[in-house]
Amino acid sequence: MRTTAYAALAATTALIGLGTATAAGATEAPAETAARAAAEVVKEKGIVLECTGKAHGLAAYVNLYENDVYANYVQVILNDDPALAKSREPADILDAGEIRTGVRIAGKQARVVGTAVRYGAKKHVHEEYDDAGQHIVADGFHRRLGYELALRYDGTTVPLRCAPAFYYSLNVTKTDTTGG
Image (cartoon, rainbow, N blue to C red; front, side, top):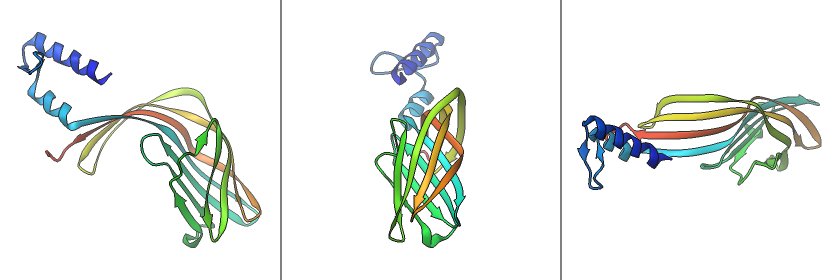
């Protein structure tokens, strides 16, 4: 896909006569050559669920982030207490609609269990921002996640409400802005 876009760009540039010749014989504007060399495009897919709940004197915050290119992340905080907080990077969080993950807190397993499925229309996403010397452009879509999740810890089950709760599929372009 990326090669086709650059071929179209090179062909358009050659037609209007603004480019310079390349080794392959196509024409490409010098600025486009530099941008292509510095840009990295990655397709990223995953889920975002940020959840809270309370039951039987136990308050829970759960953050589930899955990214098929970079690390997945699970974080659980109980009773808003830093001593009762843990995170880890599991291999998978969502598998065939099932969520089964967790962390160990104070010697006990805190398990997040349930289901999550995509539903509704795709919502187009376009974001641009600068971070760590790079200009980042994300284009793609989000879709809502229907979920039924609970946290189980030390004999207590806490139903979770999540907002945001979505699936994403993005083409992320990172361009170095530091000139190097």
